[in-house]
Image 1 (tube, rainbow, N blue to C red):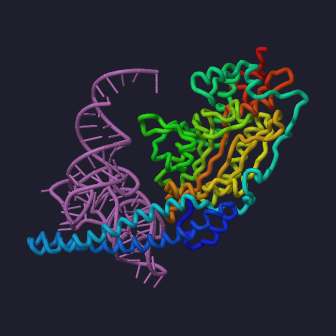
Image 2: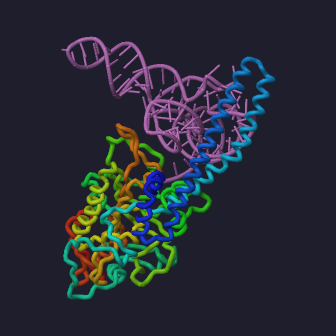
Image 3: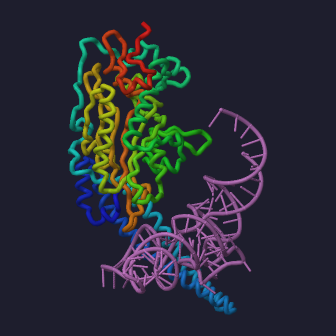
Length: 428
RNA sequence: GGAGAAAUCGCCUAGCUGGUCGAGGGCGCAUGAUUGGAAAUCAUGUAAACGUGAAAGCGUUUCGAGGGUUCGAAUCCCUCUUUCUCCGCCA
């Protein structure tokens, strides 16, 4: 969400940015919102004048009453009634215009960073850098569900029975691996100076509508029946929600937080074969990082955030690459975004395991997240990134650490969390 | 879940028989005076958002949130949220 003042004084820059994102249908909105803004300011000026008049005349009544001049006071009351009538007609316009303006402002995309490559959709995202050799071993890598089943590590049939498609039972070593990865991820981030959080897993509708659009809400969020509560789709929802309408002292910045939560998503829409298994599911767990910082620091934190993910995956033997989101694939709120993708030796391609975003001040403006500075208050910059999200991450982990004999090697950093095991063996 | 009390400007607090209350006091903070320097003392200032203006300023809105009564609401009424105390229940 942009600053209306910025739009007012830089309409061409805003339009240029819309074109870069291939959202030409939104171009007319710029002039429209500027026009509505002018109307709003006029309505507000008129309303303010009337309110000022009403206030001052009302004060006279008080003075007259105090002096016991009842008749005169009655006379003045009539005057106020007239003003009030006029005010009522006019003032309805103000909130109406304000709401219309906000509606449009929510749709006008944030100004993208100059470094963002121009492109229409995800096919034009740009590979930035590869980390680790994308090895294809000389034996066949099975589908991840088959690998898990070879360890008796997954039960999708029972899950379908109890909960439906998109759920899973993890068991034995695979379940332990799942927990180990999360524990390791938590400690990995704590070691890098982040503060660990376990947030609420349900949030009120007022927070939901703050942190996402209506369409997202419909397609993602599960509602608790009979309660004003929704299951979170990511811990970012509760972690950013925590800062809504808040001030943070400048000297407390940056806030570097790492949160764990289960995530629940409806995942409305059809998915192909590669999205089966535990790739796209209604329930998963995620270690996330969230940063609230000064505006000038956000590019630096963006770099540090995605590097954390890369280092994490590399420490577990998984080759990754970074893919820069092109202008057309970038969500409207984001200034810049980069996907971390893990190598799949089975598919012989990379697939998304994390997404790092710098939202600039857009999220802060929308949610009123402010910094109390020495020289006045200003909006914070917010960023977020995935550390790791199993069980999807397990796909990459198992495929890259699978041995020819069907066993899976446990990389050194994970061993303390796996009871010291260097390898897990199949039951076959 | 039940009963009661409460939510005010960074913090503490006054106001809550409706008008002179955007709001008094203390602490904190800022500036100045005093001092060799500091402490102490004294003086002045000290919320946010929006509109308007070159600026000083002026205007509007905001006393947990939303709605209502009224010419006028921090103050009265309703709903919601949160906190505290007591009771009940329970990992």
